Amino acid sequence: MDLTPLFRAVCFLILIRITEGGDKRPNIVFILADDFGWHDIGYHGSIVRSPYMDFLASEGVKLENYYVQPMCSPTRAQLMSGRYQIRYGLQHLVIQPDQRACLPPDEVTIAQKMKEAGYATHMVGKWHLGFYRKECLPINRGFDTFFGFLNCLIYHYTYDFGYWHTPESGNKTIMFGWDLFRNHDCVAKEHKGEYSTILFAEEAQRVIWNHDQETPMFLYLPFAAVHNPLDVPREYEAMYEGIIEDEQRRKKAAMVTCMDEAIWNITKALMDTGMWDNTVLIFSTDNGGATSVGGNNWPLRGGKRSMFEGGIRGVGFVTSPLLDEAVRGTENNQLIHVTDWFPTFVHLAEGNLSGTKPLDGFNQWDTISQGMFSPRNEFLINIDPMEICANPLATNQFRPNPYFDVCVRGGIRVGKWKLVTGVPRQMYWTAPPELGLENIRLSEGKDKMVWLFDVYEDPNELYDMSEEKPDIVMALLQKLGNYNATAVPVNYPAGDMWANPQLRKGHAWGPWVEKY
Ligand SMILES: *[C@@H]1O[C@H](CO)[C@@H](O)[C@H](O)[C@H]1NC(C)=O
Ligand SMILES: *[C@@H]1O[C@H](CO)[C@@H](O)[C@H](O)[C@H]1NC(C)=O
Ligand SMILES: *[C@@H]1O[C@H](CO)[C@@H](O)[C@H](O)[C@H]1NC(C)=O
Ligand SMILES: *[C@@H]1O[C@H](CO)[C@@H](O)[C@H](O)[C@H]1NC(C)=O
Image 1 (cartoon, rainbow, N blue to C red):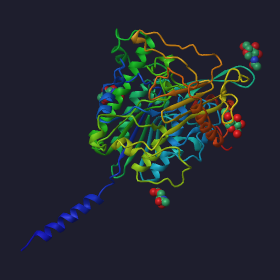
Image 2 (image 1 turned 135 degrees about the vertical axis):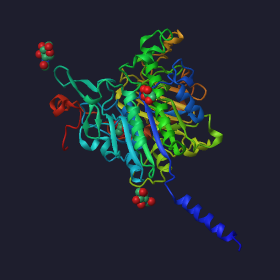
Image 3 (image 1 turned 180 degrees about the vertical axis):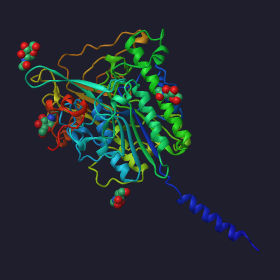
Image 4 (image 1 turned 60 degrees about the horizontal axis):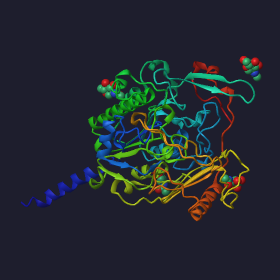
């Protein structure tokens, strides 16, 4: 009897079972570090020890031309929505604890899209996208589970948080309360004394171990590290004893090294559960390092809150066995922006964009996984009409012009050109204390309000070319003007005294407005 046809049939059936059995879409683990600077990671030549991140990045792709926002809330909002903040009023600073403001509920989040596509969605860590009413909470924005805190920072061992509320007339008062939640419940007291980085890493490992691998997983892990307060278990700081003299820098470095170990623990859990082979792990900072509290962005100009590269050029890498062999261990210099994660993840989830508003992001999966050209050639940095130049009556070569008032803080990148207007903040270069160099300051006119850089040739922004290339300035101002024409008004309301946690049961921060 000829067994070949039977053998073929059996093989065919087995093949069908393999291809049909189980969901092959990748797990996505997105790790967001807080206030993590360009010069705070080992592979950028820093004294800070990050051996595990260096290793993961060297197995994956380093994103060396990757941009975020200069502050927390806007970066998180862009990550969640795939859209610039001029679309939803978050142009000015961050969401304050006492403001009736949040990422508007009609912005569809990436967590909602992943959930809709059938992913299990979990969040562990910092939200900072508003909480004044229930609809704003992560648990109502697409996450199946939430373990973390709502405000801009957390006291790393006590899980409480204080904020100076400033009424329109009268004296400041402190608002103080607990800020650690499991879904809807405040669990701050139970975890008092545990260090936030270790706590969040343990929780992430628990999520991974409990995950039912029949469905793919989306895990969003925004650490409280390495944001101040500069607090860290002694053993990590001890590693830098006699190596970094500057106390703030030493503590910051220790916080990074602790986070580095936490990331390795999480990676190990993904390996031990067998999930790693089908996982895409992304690491990103939310903005540049805060140089006033030990962060560093050397040799880039400026830092957190600044429109210069030190504020917005982010540390980022992607590691995954799903990356093309040829790109592993390489640096990717294609232009990638934080809004790009939204369509990239929807692509990986084999979802669609129905129900979302027009995105500013591009699917970058082929750029990252195969080294293709980026579909992106420009991005808006920001337009903040609440930040205006010191002398609003001043005129200059570009003021007035028909497109955009250069007294207003604005910024745009097109190809190699970058234009900054108004008051960019932190104009100088902060040298890492451990290098023993002087900070660099240029003498620039007090009323200067236009900068043009070729960031390919001059990534450190030493040479302003606005006077040499006025035609390029005008072309970019016209583009900024076009963005401005589509912007919604800023939503930055005065603080509301009813936000005070002391007025609420359990003295925890949380929604204080029922309806609006
Ligand atoms: C988009 O995805 C959702 C959820 O998977 C699905 O219900 C819907 O039919 C899809 N829409 C289109 C146009 O494919
Ligand atoms: C603010 O505080 C000062 C000193 O404590 C007090 O004299 C003043 O009356 C206070 N003002 C208001 C508006 O409460
Ligand atoms: C990593 O895991 C080890 C072993 O469980 C643990 O002792 C350590 O505290 C963890 N580190 C962090 C930063 O989570
Ligand atoms: C942006 O557009 C608004 C509305 O058209 C206008 O009032 C404002 O001056 C523009 N901003 C700048 C910086 O040009």
